[in-house]
Image 1: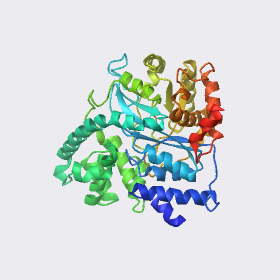
Image 2 (image 1 turned 90 degrees about the vertical axis):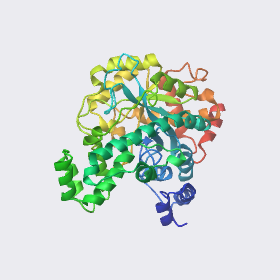
Image 3 (image 1 turned 60 degrees about the vertical axis):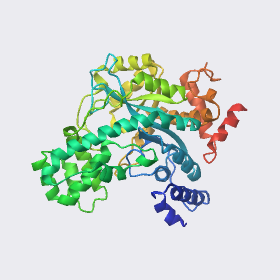
Image 4 (image 1 turned 30 degrees about the vertical axis):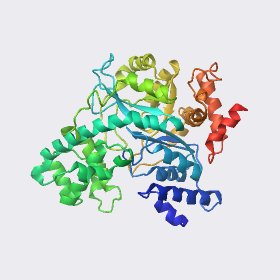
Length: 440
């Protein structure tokens, strides 16, 4: 396989082909045939095809390396099936990696159960991330998530049926098994999300109305959707390589509510149960801060108020529940929001984790906001997360928050600095050998 072939096959549908390509690219990198411009930037919240993304895990690792990132991490909705490939491909390519998953949990039985917290679609249902899953606990996560995926797919089928009742008069029919499932990695442990349904719908609309004015007229006049001027320009561009994703963004923001069905309690397990499970496997559960939205960089969230109005109360509740960390995305928030969430987190001794959720071909892997003075500490946290994951995969006692951690008497900031230094000095091609440094 040539280097040119490998750049294409790194996103092949066959996992073995992808890893072979990662090996070829890694060799080219070590030999100086391929080079990037290294940056201090990191991103440990990249979605893959195992939830929704144009990137296979190996392709995400290579795209992150090309962008100059030091760390790449996979985080998929209701799935961790990208994890093994992400770790293997990253070590072949030569970039640090970390893995986790994201899921909806219930806050319904908490004092904030009737509020819209960080989820645009639901009150009392919250997104959280489980970061730093040890390599030897991945199968336990798969078993934990499998019944939730099954329940979600029953809801997905009902959503597709509801969608078809809205669109059948236009001759647009989405078939769950034949149109939606093939867009996913369901057979390999991947999840199916509303974005899969919307991508299938986007394909159907393009097939029926083509691109450009006719499609825009249908969206405006028949579906009564508001199309932002920026997105309108994208949808008028017949050569736009991101066309389906841009259309999907419009549909998610303006049309999804018309057929969305709220998750049941069985699908969105109680937050305390999710946090307890994460801790039991040595992972780090983190509340995902959204903050009030003025405008959405991905075009799929409308301006809306979320947790900023009761943020102090929320963080106190997170501590009470047992969260050791919060995660947030600097590009999505104002400086004022970032300064406030940082201050409140530090007052409560919560680890701060960053990551920008990549799930569209239009998004950049770079996150220059991390290089600003008020965000640089998030880079250390990401490196500490890498060390936590690799070390605890070998010996659980070295988990950052393990009660028997040999550095437990140090402050959280001191431990993060120590772990970050360990990860930075490790061999990215053999990351688990960092345990030798710690033990020595």
